[in-house]
Image (cartoon, rainbow, N blue to C red):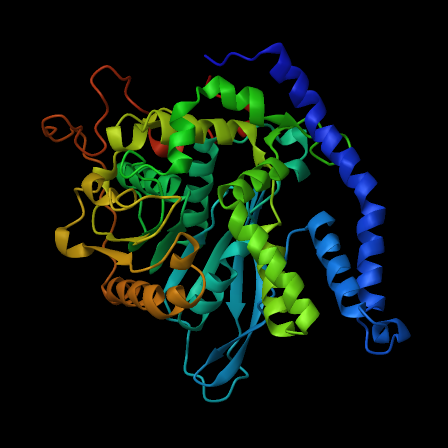
Length: 478
């Protein structure tokens, strides 16, 4: 049961609004700083020739970037190189839900000479995390995979932009979204790649589909996720276990103010998440901003542009739905329901041992300070129905959390492992789904057998007859 103090309740009503007032007050100064940076650095401006102009321009641009509001960046992927030729790419919305869009990056090869047929390339559903940043954080992941795969991406929507009439969004709803996306794409030669947070709901979604006898993807690639946060706990894990659930609701859950479409919705605001990100490594961020100032003064424009690109992405954050966030804290980081075999989603028990005939690849970074060593690899202990020959694990030497899905290490070390693993299961013929037997097999000691319900549970209705999930009617678990 969550307990909320009067102080916490008052704070949730005021803090977000105070943040908006502060942002509005700062806006004229950030625009002024941006204008100064331009006029003191533009080659055709007489002010750029004054003594000290470079330092004035650099200081103003730094002030502008610290104070400005960062909107969601674009994926900005319009072409990829295949066999030395540029192949046009168009971003298309395949399915639009209140809290997420399913995107496809469609490659067009018909008019590109010398390109062989790419229609039989494996299909990849890349599940982006809903943990503060936008799905564009996986831009490098998408761009790297596009030459050899048909790529779909989950593009989560900022909760402050979702009208309150759409109801709440919970961790159960997240699992339901993944199931619906898999069915929409189709499982024929489908491979699901989950990065960080979604490893947990993706494993749940595929487990439930397998337990019902539905077709499942050919392979699962899980990268840097908290399957079992009890393994090598990090500072992120420790915060979740040291504070009770009511503390998170009282201190980090706030109400969206009236100047957004989601007015009145309870969220974990992006500006608070961003403050947490910065607090994890304040010295590193301070040094990065100082180096940026120095690069501008020296005229090192390439390094300065790299800084801009990184922080344009890093500083763009979204609000998370409160119910989803609190569910994640409780289910994943406090009660460890998935590895303990005690997680029920919409009345169905999540049992990863029900997964069969699916390849499983787990990937961890040697220096990951968000998902510690062994947390993702724990999936192998749970997916006992997957043959040992169909499972693999790779620890990326010298890689931190972001290095396993973005940057040089991702492109040169991780992607070849992912590409070859997917190709192995893409080449194998798809196996038909097995329908659930009328009587369940005898369970192993201490574990339920596949889809069999617990003895005390009421018999479940057939999947086709269950009413569709309605997030508007759900309440947060307290």
